[in-house]
Length: 272
Image (cartoon, rainbow, N blue to C red; front, side, top):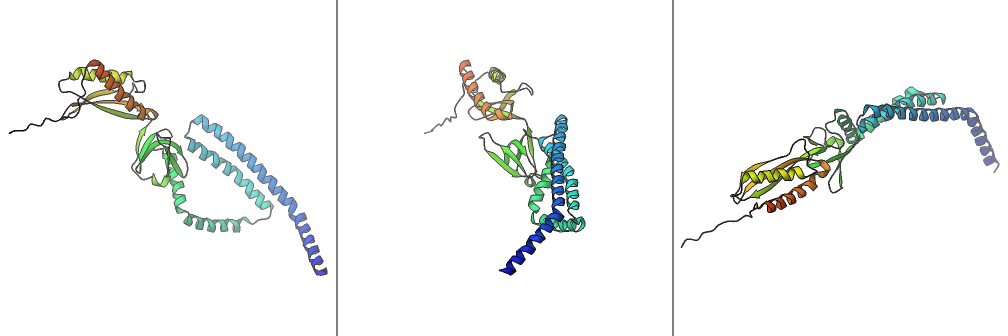
């Protein structure tokens, strides 16, 4: 029992010595880190305000803001470690070795980061564009360091790793798409009158853009009808809806003008 009490006393004395010796240094180090955190946050907010005036892409703005915070906070970390008596050279060497091992173990993650930086700075597409890539397509909702998120008309989302995007063939539709709607008219129809009706339907739809101008033409001479195609540019969110609106409007306009839309038919003759 006496030996245990002596050991406890020695541990208590050692703890007090460490507290007296390192306590003030630890407190100063915590204050330095806290000061660095608040200074970094202030610099980050100031950087964000400056970048907002430059109207950069959101991913670029966030990346620069975070880099500014880290760049300001890092000297405070170094000063805090020096205040605690930590030797920085062995620490840096150890971190370098550990960083090499981590880099080998996380090649896929680092590949996504590098690809994300490539996308952010080369800007092959922007948020709001409609793109098609790696058998997926959709409106670009977010561009992050690791992934790019696409949105579909059914409100679902597709998250693509950035390394699957860089180096692939990319089709960027921009913020508008060309919509084509086909309709058949009978062979005895006045083609000029039919094309005029199609043009009126396109002009009457509020979702069809006036610039670029819509148009219509005869596409082909099919077996049972003459195929007429109406083309117009629409905004990405309106693409799916406008096709249905135009189909309905064309049917109603043709019926009102007495223009027949023939159904497929074949004439069979039997010789005896």
